[in-house]
Length: 185
Image (cartoon, rainbow, N blue to C red; front, side):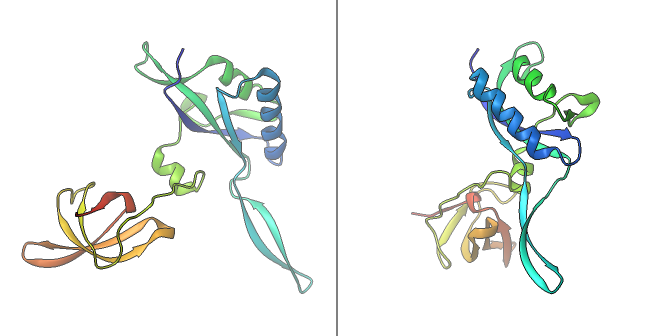
């Protein structure tokens, strides 16, 4: 069996058991040498400043209480015609103490889409740009594919570039992802 890709899945846990579930899954992966099937386990957290008794302190808070994200290797299943995790990986995650099941219809695991992974901040995608404000670029994705325009604004932190294109004789600003434009040579 060859693994095609890896997908993030959401696992529902008892409230307050997120860290315990994550560490238990990691222990099983280590003990059974399943690094090729269960690639990563995350409990998404954020740093929040709390004020208590006139004292400020930084606290790490779970973004999705009751949920753990697991990145599993998937392979192409000829029966279903789609990508699927191994039965062993499913069994290990599903039978970890504190896990109530995978998120999906009828507890059938449904992977997160690429957009969901990026929107949730699960994986940081790094896009290197070789253009800057004022450069002429070509749009290479989305509904404006094939248009050329001038870079008007660049926001690398939010994966956004604003390009001014000429449409129906008017200068029109459009916002695109950083990877949807290429510099014209």
